[in-house]
Length: 270
Ligand code: GLU
Image (cartoon, rainbow, N blue to C red; front, side, top):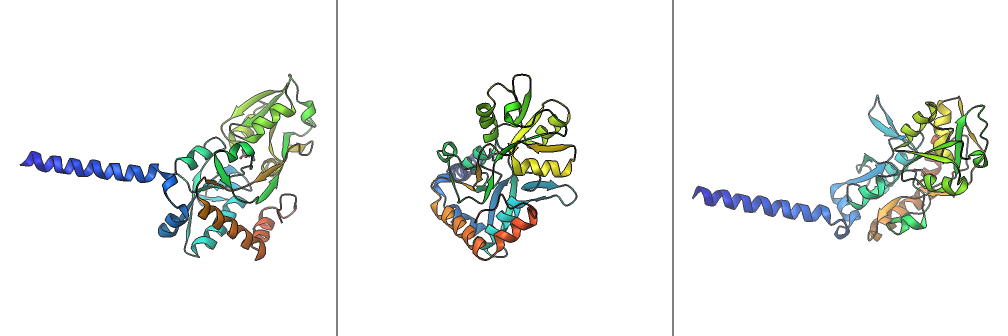
């Protein structure tokens, strides 16, 4: 008798694991707009180490930046004032796998819209315009990508467009790939590379806190940022785009933009 009860429990437990497993594995079967409405939450993949876009503020344990405020505003438009925007840390390398696995509902993390990425994910309308540049120690002989040759090392982050673009722009330069932007900047400060390269807006965030470093050579690529959403989530994608449009019309976008970039309009999208 006891044995029978034990087996009945086992069958139930296994069935439960099987069912919940199916639910989370099959991201494609869920309507993310519907599930976020019923849970009253949108889970956003964001940077935690990128000043001005997504940076963890240690005292408050809150992540802050332009991407964060845009995500909060979209969440409010979609779910109302009580809707929760939950933030999960991603890096350039982990963001697409985390989205595809269903760990996050959307990526808003300094992510350039590219044709290659469009094969894996869908993108919202552009919400920020960046361009790739170089960050060097003040007084460095490097003043543009042309100065990066076989005697110099450029620091990049794995999984970024910057890592790909620099190989084209400076084919002879040595490249050192780091896991994230905090590590890349630490490597630059430690002299492990001669220049760090990524989007101008990200580098500006670093230079603003470290007066020994400066951007040089202007921009040499176009990096339009979009919000990435899993394929097959047209309802959610349309709702996000509608929220962005509304934010442009009612002044929310400008307000958030001016809060983070009061002196530089170059990234602003009309
Ligand atoms: N915007 C570029 C990219 O999407 C560089 C910034 C980043 O690594 O997130 O790859």
